[in-house]
Image (cartoon, rainbow, N blue to C red; front, side, top):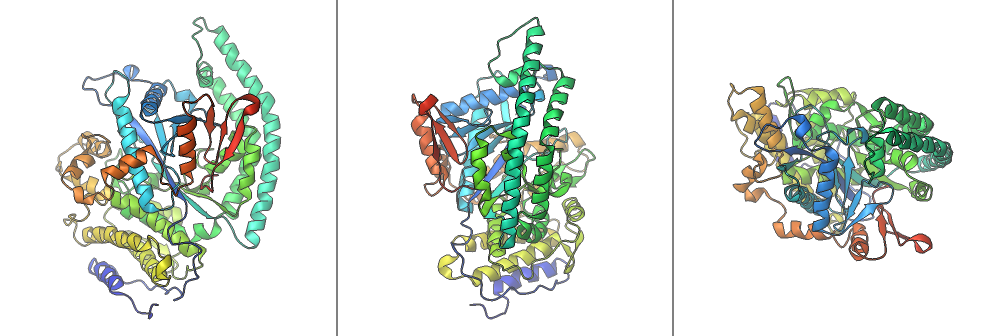
Length: 595
């Protein structure tokens, strides 16, 4: 039990912050006795989805027309993965491929761009209950993506980048998923009533969509028939590529109009009902987290930022993609649930009535640093435990979140301060406030229920200390290099000297993220093995199978059993369909984070 005084570790953080030139900020101490948690801390279901960019590293100067189309790249990566392990096709999304490792691969490219170079490939980890396990799964995913590119049967030297922005300014990256309490008390009944309305709207939209989809298929077939070179069609998506761009835009707009009422209702639920407590108390943490876990970006004006994703984030909570919005809290998976899936999604909508749902965070950079990757998910999971326990006293409230986010992310000197209910605070002030509150919460939790939380606190403090060192002395990056991605990259760029042009600096920006022996971060790690938090043997194990405690273990086992058998298998995150015809059956998996 705490005695109401700060611990030595608390004082150490405070001393470093004050030495860095910051005034102390008053914080309200959380209640000394936390409610008994129902499970060990940081043991909720978590997962991560990461978009990887591909590039051709051939020495010869290839013209754009000579580069491989994005669909071909994706197909070749999938073929290489199938040679690595058993797989199963997605049930609703035929561009999706589920893996025996428990994860999945998806083609993140619009159908109209399948014939163009570039494109993104999204790898999702299996659901796990530990930040440490998630880090191992994420590193195995990085290795799988890199080796699939190296083993792809193309005439190109294909590489994979794990970053958040390309040379053209396109922003992508990763998204975090956490199982969380969607609402409580009266709020959960309001939420369920609205989900019931959405279910009815889903049925109505589906009925209206059937003739429209029939018309669209007829138009695509007609476009193919009118072509003189009637090449064989192997995939339904190939028909879409035969339709003129203006016509495809009209068809897509028509489908959007049909689903617009559902989208508007979903947006109301997302902004006003779902995850209200989490959004209120996590926002300040997430916008300041870029100072620790941002991956850095050099924009076209030569300005360096801590996070490319932070700079394009334009809303607090929204669908994320329906009209191009980029929210902090994303509900795009709900949009897919109610608008994009087939008849079978009507049955799967049942689980949307449950009290615990998938909370998706879009404000997340792709990290190469093990420490940053671990702290990113571990600290967030711990704060969710605090919020669900009602221990939120003293957590800062941001007054203008989006403006504050852009201000903090664009100031790599860490000087900027933003308005909160506790006065103006810097990113370091905010992170320190959350860390101290989390320390108090963990200390007030019975030792046998703390789980992985002490490790989360230790590593969180280590990352914060590295940033504080830099803020105190801009030449002191010794602890930050290899730990803080945006600072490590900034240090590498600075090695070029002040006379280096934008192209040379941007090359460092991009190749820092290359997942190959030529990647700049990987080269740095060759001399810093002590910064690795996951050993190679464990990464190889996670390449083949998910952790036994994960709900993905059953999915992985079924894929290994049925992938090469006479029984066809198609998978979803929560269930699989096995067999053909009248013998086809649905097999449910255990509790899951994805809806």
